[in-house]
Image: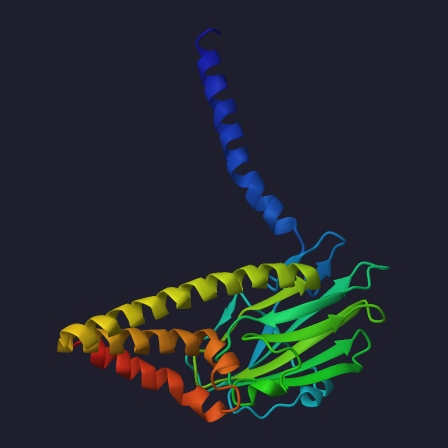
Length: 278
């Protein structure tokens, strides 16, 4: 009898081990798959929200689909698997959508921000829960900067929840630049505070670049060394490309020229390469 006890204990331990290995798998198989649409909810204490996990998409290779076509034919959207929509360089267009709802009685103005100022075309449709159009806005850096409702380097659209507590936002996007669409929702006061601090940081950065440019320029006027002239040109070209990619150049320096905005980045990349190699 005493010799059989270790065997019994070993058998019991083996059974417990097998149960512990298989139990999570069986529980996972029993969970039903959910096809319910994921919704972004604005709480009373919300300040900033992203569309990670609630953004749906569909590719439009020929850039020919309209919103009525998608709705009337029930074209299915897929949940985007990444935190931020980014398809790189592509000739295709994409339709994106997300649904956002606010708590009842919390009818506050929010701002939707697309934090990538190089997109060519963004067609935005805001629908209520009955698929009635609330607002339509067209944006992009192919349009004059002053045509924007909110004059900001990024693309900003107000969303109002006083009447419609649940809204679905559709975005049709395509671009000759990298197709990135980082969407954020901001409480208005929090957006003003955060972006004001960002403006101070950007001002400090470009101020330092200006000081470097002027310092080396005065050195060149005194010494007349060609190396300083090349370095001055490199600083200017590098600052220019930073202004173009950040959207600040389009906002403050050439807001009336969408054509110049389109060519400024490839042109300055070439200049940085030329002056950086000399």
